[in-house]
Image (cartoon, rainbow, N blue to C red):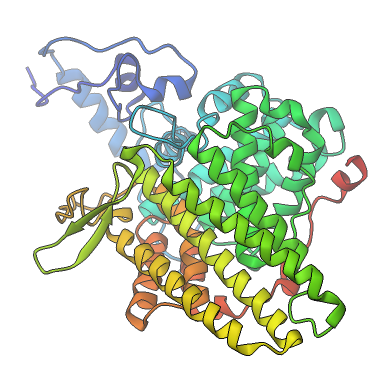
Amino acid sequence: MVYGGKPSTGCYLCRKRKIKCDEALPECRNCAVYGRPCPGYRSDTIFRNETQKVARLMKRKRYSSNDSSQNRLDAPVWNSNDKPPLPSCYVSDSTWEERAVCYFFDQYANCDTSDECLNHLAFLPSLYATCQDSGQDGSASSSLRLAVEAAALATLSNRLKAAPLLLKARGYYGMALRELRSILGSQSQAVRDETFATMVILSIFEDISGERNGLASPHTKGFGLLLKLRGEDQISHSQGRDLFICAYAHTLIENIVLRSNPGTGTDLIVGQLDSSEPVHRLLLTAAKLGQVVTESAPYQGSLDPDAIPKLIELIQISTFVDLEMVEWTQHLPDDWLPLMAHSQTGETFLTYQNMSLAAIWTYYRAARLGLQRHLLELRRTLSSIAGDSQAYEIYRDAALDEILDLTTDTCRSIPFSLGDVDALGVPMSQSGDQPPIRALYGYLMLWPLWYVLSLGFGTTMQMEQIRNALGRVGSVLGIKLALTLAQPESMSWHISILTPNQYPLLSSMG
């Protein structure tokens, strides 16, 4: 008799597939992703005769180097200059794609549960499970399946530092991109949720793998065209609404931080979001910020006296938006508000009830910083035309105080946001080589942190803290774009050299 130690407490299907079960109740998430009903858990420990099983496993291990099964990772032939391939690992009946997809969903898909307030990719597990059953080559379902597996393999590759997995991921990415370009030729296929989700996941893949060509995503223009093409019906159901918010927030933050014009033409759709929801209300206000930034672009730096009335109007609109953003903080539930915590060494932290709230507040502060900078530029332009430098200097001093406060609060939130301290400010112990937080939360902080860094209004120590935070998101959480954003060179890149639109087919449809 052989006793193999404490038996697994995972569900029957996860044990059969030889993957780690999250043991959630009433059913585990892996089974939902796999598209099968969870069979449940066993209630007690059992002893079995495993002698023959051990013998079979040893025999398989002996011959595993010659096994070309799809259920193990076989790296291509490597020459002496290549990095060592991932060691051959026997996986009973679970492919690397399946293992990677489960890990990807765990790291990036966030459902609206009692302790969360963000729905990030919550639609994806069920949509992917459907695509596994129905996806045919050249279809929207097939393109989404390939995109998810590309992003998942890239995520697991960064986690395991396994170059062969990244090679596989790039192969899937190329196939997904080809199929996406093909299905965008059909309007009926282009407006499907699977098509839109494919574009979202391909954008995430490029951020994880660090393969953007410039700061702007090559998919941003496609997002805008599809948002417009899909129309108002897309927010009539939860899956379409979550997709809309995910893509719209992506284009909006890029518009604000890169001073670009997404040109989505989706103002009426945004206006239908539920303003009683704090996240939706913040998005509605930030949308006004994006609009005023775009409208102000032709007037900033102008010396034309005829521009004075328009500049005054833009300043009034921007001031009203700023008041709306301040008001947003005054109507939040108590458990959404930041908490002040102090360490034994005298450091001050801002902590939150959960990581989602920390990400939302980081986004809010970056948006307000952008608005304050925008107002400063408008007032400076008006001052240079009107010749009233004294009024500008009075306003500038007050605005800089607000900017410094927002920058300081952003930096005080970083230790909690990266999992260094808990809600009481007590240092968190790290377990082995496990990431301190889910990659999702580092991903949500990328652009807000970079924007605060690029403005450069903080102290030298604060700027270094933000740069180090971006570096950790890249090296520890495996989001390679963060390593690019942490470099000083990223501050000097200009919008004019950003990647052009890759989706010309959509232009004719819109």
